[in-house]
Length: 285
Image 1 (tube, helix red, strand yellow):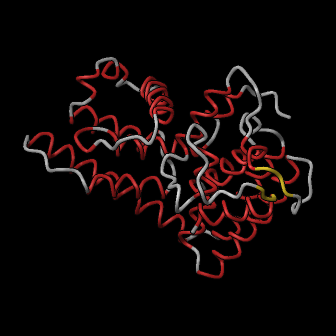
Image 2 (cartoon, rainbow, N blue to C red):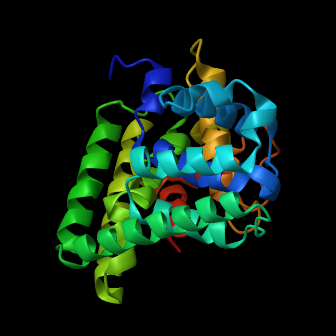
């Protein structure tokens, strides 16, 4: 197992930066969305301090009133889009969030808003040119193997067995693998998803020292290792799965929202094959 501290493991996840920028766009200003739980909100607030603390806008983050000012949030979002978010999925989601915002009455702020929209459009166009010129199936397969290798080497050991699977799938969803799904044809997409499914099921079984068909009670899949940082790991997982719906994504919901009751659709006894396959379908379909 890796010697990384759990907190370090969480911060090292590529999906954290991508999702954070999307959440910042959704949760800044008047169009703020509600959080599913205090666990998600607490982790997001810590991330905000860390990411904003790395920028020249740090002084604005010290004043909650100023942080809500539209000119401040737009400036911060612009920096985050240039400095933190790297992938096409995150950029598109930020762009979609911007389209739902109310128009600004102050001319200077409206101009700032237009400039940010133009920045996003340019970034997305540039990314799409690069992606269309790439062998996305190859990049997706390589990324999948890299993520599973990190899982196997203990990079996600701070989480429950099911949580490690969800973390790995989120890394794929927000990264090059996810881009390959967005830009590939139906056959390529199916090939990539089935590769991810097979590798995830195999590693999930290895994590509990069982065959892929050996069934375990659900709480064995959801049990976190006992460490001083266990609460932070739970909050991180809750935040990553904040969009999960208990009916549409029962396995992912039970895996990430461990502070709530287990969803009805979560099998009470299940194998790595059933758990991993269901989670792959919930994340990518």
